[in-house]
Amino acid sequence: MTGWVIDGEHITLYAAIFLVVELLAIFAALRAVMTARTAQGAVAWAIALVTLPWVTLPLYAVFGGRKFYGYRIARRSGDADIRALARRIEGQFTPALRPELTEQRGRFAALERLAAMPFLGGNDARLLINGEATFGAILEAIGQARDYVLLEFYIVHDDGIGRALHTALLECRKRGVRVFFIYDPIGSHDLPLSYVESLRDAGARVEPFLSTRNPLRRLQLNFRNHRKIVVIDGGLAYVGGHNVGDEYLGCVPALSPWRDTHIEVRGPAAGAVQLAFLEDWNWAAREIPELHWRAETVERRDLPVLVVPSGPADELDTCSLFFTHVISSARRRLWISSPYFVPDEPVVAALHLAALRGADVRILLPGRPDHRSVYLAGISFIEEMRGSGVRMFRYKQGFLHQKVVLCDDVAVVGTANLDNRSFRLNFEISLLVADAQFAGEVADMLARDFEQSREVDAAALARISLPVRVASRAARLFSPVL
Image (cartoon, rainbow, N blue to C red; front, side, top):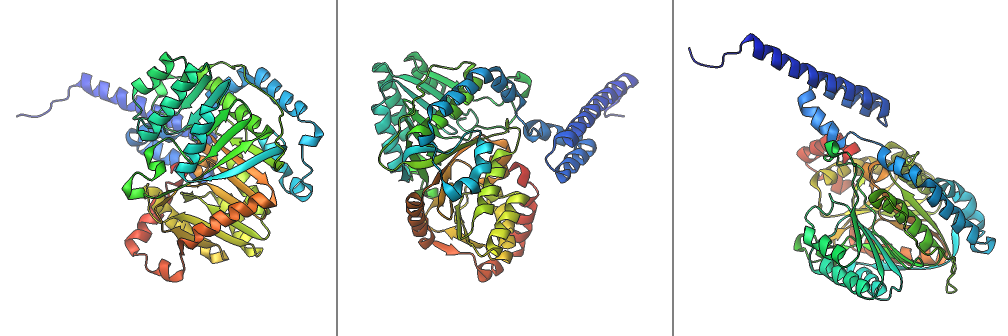
C-alpha cells in the first residue's frame, strides 16, 4: 500500500502547529474587536480570523492595523521640540496675521482645533492646473532655493520628470542648498536604489517613510504617506494631487490626458506645511533639522489659509471629520472632485443632508478606472447618492486625479481622496482657503471640468448590467481597505 503514512509523532507536530495558528488567530480576533472602527468591521475580522485563520491571518497582518502607534511614540519623543516650534509659529503670527474671517471663523472654528493650528493670514495662493504647470512651478522654485528644499511624495519614478527632479536636486547640492527628501517605499516600489544613493552621495538627506520599524511587520501595507509636499526656504509650499511620474504629465496613453490640480502658497501658511513635513521627517530620520520659521506675509492678496494634516497617528479620525464638517457647512454649493469615491457613513449622511438643505451638490469622478475594485465599489455609492438629489458626474477627458472641494466661498485643495484609506489609513494634507475670489477661481476651473463630463442620470444607471451591479456590491464589502 502506497501513500502518506502519518505516525503519532507527526500527528502531534501538526496538531501543535494548528493550535499555535488558532491561538494567534484568536489573539488577533480579540485585538480586532478592541481596535476596529466599527462593530461590523470587528465582527467581520473576528469571524474570519477564527474560522479561516490560515487565510485571514496574513491578510490581517497586511491590512489589519488602524492606528500608527510607532509614529505616535516618535511624535511624543520629538513633541517638546515640535510643539515648541508650533507655539513659536503661532506666537510670531501677531493678531494682524490671524484673520477675523467673521462668518467663516465661526463655521470652521472646529477645524482649527482639529488641525491644532489657526487660520493664517498674509498668504498668496495660485492654482496649478495639470502637470506641466505644477512641475514647471516646482522645478523653477527648486532652482531658486537659497537654503533648503523639503520634498515628500508617495510615488517617485525614475522616468522623465523623475530624472528632471533628480537633476534639480543635484544642482541644489552644488549650490550648497540643503535637501530633505521623504518617499514612500510602497508607492515608490520600483524606484531604483541608484536614484536614492546618487542623491545621498551628493549630500542630500533621503529617507523612506516606513510604516513600521519592526522587521517582522514589514508586510504592513497600511499607514502609507500619501502626502505630496514641497517647501522652499520655509516661505513657499506646494501641495496637491501630483506625484513624480510621467503619467502625471499625461504620458501614459491609457490614462491620458491626466487631470490634476496642485496649489502653490506663499506666506505664513507655508510654515504650517513645513511643520507637517517636520513631523514626518522626525519619524523617518529621528531628527529635527534647523529650518526657517518666519512670519513673512505676502502683500498681494492676504488670503486666510488653514493647513490640515491628517493621518493614522492622530487621536481622532482627522481626515474623515474634516470632510464631514466641510460638507456639513455647505449652504449654497458643494462641488467635489475626487478620483476615488468610497466614503464612510458620516460622509454619506453629510452629503445627503447637504442636498436636502438645497445646496447644489455635485461630485465629479473619473470616467476611466485606474483601480478596478475601487471603481466598482464607487458604483454602488453613486446609485445611493441620487436618492437625495446629489448629482454625480463622470469625467470624459482622460483620467481625473485631482482632490478639490468647493464649499460656498471656501476652497480645499489637497492630497486626500474620498475613501477610507485617506480618511483613516494614510497620511494626508489639505489646504483650506477662505476667500471668495480664490473660490471663484476654483469654481471656474471645476465648471470647465463639469463641461467635459457626463452626468450619471437615471438612464445611465439603468444601463448598468446585473453582473456589474453584483460586482459593485461585492467590492463595497471591502471598502474599509480600498
